[in-house]
Amino acid sequence: MKGLFTRLLLSAALAIQAAGAAELRLLTDNHPPLHFERDGELVGFAVDLVRELARETGDSIQLERLPLLRALVIAREGPDVAVFTILRTPEREADYRLVGPVLEVETALYALADHTPAIAGLDNARKVQHIAMPRKWLVYRRLQEMGFTNLYGVDTPEQMMRLLRLGRTELVAADTLSVATLAREEGLAPQQLRYVAPVMHQGSYIAFSRQTDAQVVARWQQALEKVRADGRLVKLERKWLGGPR
Image (cartoon, rainbow, N blue to C red; front, side, top):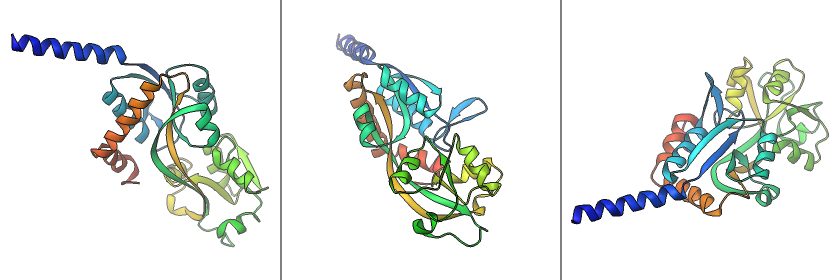
């Protein structure tokens, strides 16, 4: 009888968990090594992380790769949608329910290592002809707010790195996590780039739509804290990022 009672309690608990489980649509863009496609499959640090969090919460997830701006629009319009990963801003705090921070990210300016004369610091960066970066990136707006008038907005990070390789821009802006991968994809060795100056430090987050149940968002935040506390997050950082951030 005791064994039967225990099984009934377990079945009831599982039923309650299943009833509360959500079916979530998780959108992301191309940003190696955090999230990118390899052989037609989404992979990367953040991809592994959201899968780990889904296992922890019991929610089912559908991953899709979309341009970032389109993904953010979709996540504003309906329930059970999230975008990963994005940088936190006051506007995004108002538009989404944020889970994180997942990582702390530094965005900086880079030049070719053999560029002469050497460019050092933000003051000198204001004097070059062009600083290239995707106009959709937050750093583009940040540099505009800082009074930079020499920004060269492009559509993709691949275009940005190609301009640098061809000598059509003196500087590019990229985060320190992805710059080496972006360089390699354009045929540049990471050592061919030189760090010039930091622009900003921001936390990266998973952004859920405001229409998503607050309890769903809360359990994802709790799952993230558990994954961080028990060492699983550090293991993913070592796998994809070379070590804890």
